[in-house]
Length: 276
Length: 64
Image (tube, rainbow over the protein chains, first blue to last red):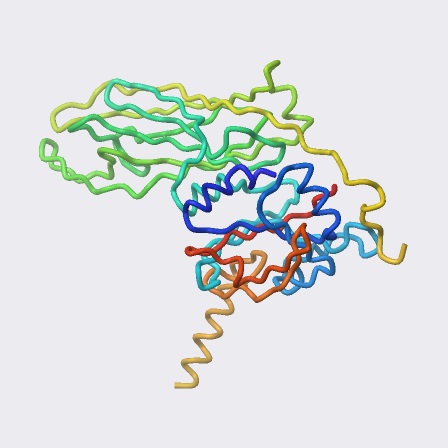
């Protein structure tokens, strides 16, 4: 389970981790032994809390063994039990990763999957919430940009200048969401007597990508089991006197591909359809 | 005063509807529960809260 890898990160933040499903205690015991899970897997066999929270997946047939499953997702609650964050998806095959939650809710980058690019007026670090990817998973890509002293780049929405523009290369292995740019500052430029939306020093841009399902993903995985996604960052940097030639920096993120786990518990423990 | 309060409640309620998401709205209290873990040990919401709270995942199943 992906959460297991980041349990320690959450614990360091003072958060305990637990996971709830409609499985019996016996199924959860078998699973946690096979997967070496060290946090509580809670059995809500009658889907009582799942219903109470409004998470019951009503699209599942009542006479199937799958009836009772929740819409999968995550709640982040504070020390008083108040919900502070929610991460849910419509499609049960797509999910937010716990690494993505660490990043979005707490600004932490848990994985070491980073690459650095040095440009003429700035340097940047491309990183991601996860080092490994599963089919259907949501991954947060991050660009941390450090402008050299005295430099600024233009923010999206600027008129008459070239704004920072992060593009992703088309790929069948993932669908890229919109880049999320931070709030810019209104910078007054004496030389041209204009106020423009710009970034200076450090700023971070993030974007979600959704990893494709297995059939589309597999052809893009190399022989070492790696998936690489690519993009580019275009910008024009200026200081208080001149604007430099627009630049386009190549960006790259490499992940380890992890096939979906299809191993099941012994037949005797498997859930039966109601009344069977 | 009562009218104001009713309106505030209504506004709150319609906001959560507009969000059209699963589960209670952000800012509301997680309902209490009492569930057994893989070792048969009981956990409540209270017992699961660390000094900063908890991350509670709902997943479809450990077996398919």
